[in-house]
Length: 358
Image (cartoon, rainbow, N blue to C red; front, side, top):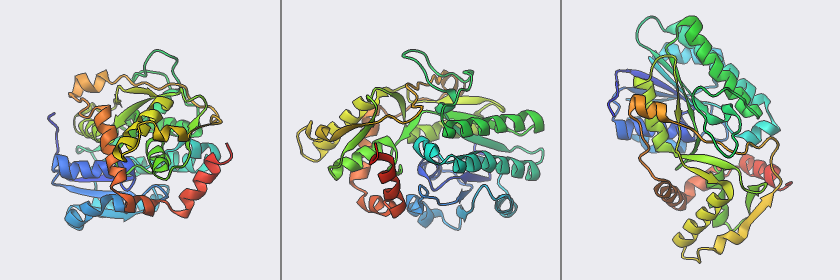
């Protein structure tokens, strides 16, 4: 995959989170990016600078710079643009968990909509006619829910079903509007469910792995038949980087794993992988599976068609699901200190609210 890497300073928002930190690591370790990366993160519950300790040790103060700031604070965003003069923005920062949006939608409206607006306004203020790019990371959840067949295409009409997906849909439309109205050089990518190292343990795969290790119940919503498409995080990062450099201005690209699993089947597969690695019978952890009341508005099936990015930009997945799950389980088994540190009082409080009442 040939990419244009002429950007001198890339501002990565949400760079201390799961996908953002993996993206920064991908640029330094796989792309060998030799420019400057500025990581803007508010460090909310899911932002963790431990994700990038090695990067900071190697590149901190030379190529890598961290700015603790809230994208909802325009003055703070403006100051970062003034100090670092980025010529590219890769916008990951977002409140991103559907369950949290159901319990408290306000934060999602502010971060995902107002925060995106502030970044767009800063770009409009600081960027002239030179080559700049604003890339916006979004989700397949903006498309709504599928039946037993069919796929989401870039042309699929938006039909968000949760406060989270509605806020992301609004931010997508803002980015597109700034391109059409102000000529902002912008691209958008919509991804399926990511998994891999450094994912905060509110999401399905790390939650299940960690609960198995503590022999706690494995909560599965409803009948467990909801279908999701799973994408290894490094494959997502490679797709984003291709779009950032070679994507057509004003276009949207779907990035998916082409890897559909029923939730219950995925949990059972994880049980088997962890059991083997812990020297137990393959069915040992399956007794922990506990069906809980479904969440409101739970979309039944997501599935992405990603022919566009494959045909136009030459992207493809490099990690099979079996390989990705194995790598992910191994990472959580060997990073107990990271796990202990992210299990703050706030996280435990959220877990109790989310599952103990179901």
